[in-house]
Image (cartoon, rainbow, N blue to C red; front, side, top):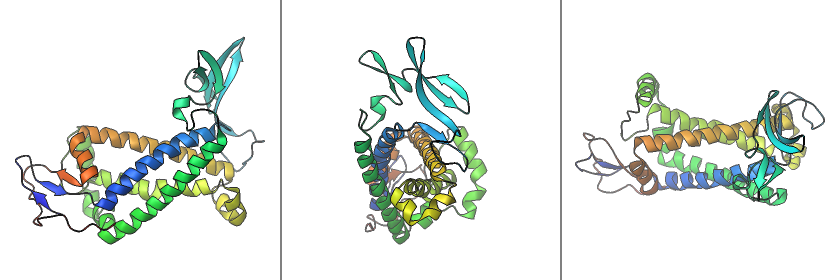
Length: 284
């Protein structure tokens, strides 16, 4: 890392090229995977639990649909038997001034109109790009030390978790060279739990994978249960992205975005800049 002294605190070279490239590839992948995934989900907008894993079983706990109350169509979302009116948002969508029975509005799916085949093509393309990006990130992070230095929490990090939680609760952020323990734990959870889980459960929905490795589906208790885990993991990733964006805005969006675009990050005053005159060679 290299740094330049300023009256605002030194700039340090915090994000390597491989980290920045994979970060933005993940942004693109997750955007298209989410919207094309909702297009696919519209083909059967239900989620199931339990070992039974067929459409013939009555063990769904989540449903998006539409029903008529008299002559009026109403959209609804049902969770564990509790039904909520979601007309206009989920189940029954306004299209050209008329309500149509559709799980999601057009702006929330790719394509915006009903086209399961195109949705699958988009979804599978970005799913494999996500796999390649995760593999590329893992190899580069092992080589350049990003994984050991910035992601995996050390015992000293864990001992600071209490003060870090208290600081975040008061929206008081320190701008240092290293990630704080909450960042390390959240990034490690996404990279080593959520992304691998969503990839594996996605594979469980492939008939070809089912035929070659039926044990994989059994591991999750059935194909429909794997589909449910896939969907819930997607919601967890959406929640992570939301919190991540909020933290970026709260910590100083210009500095944070500059860091993930150029690699340079301005730290708090008092931190010594790196002695090296220029960034070390990139390892991608």
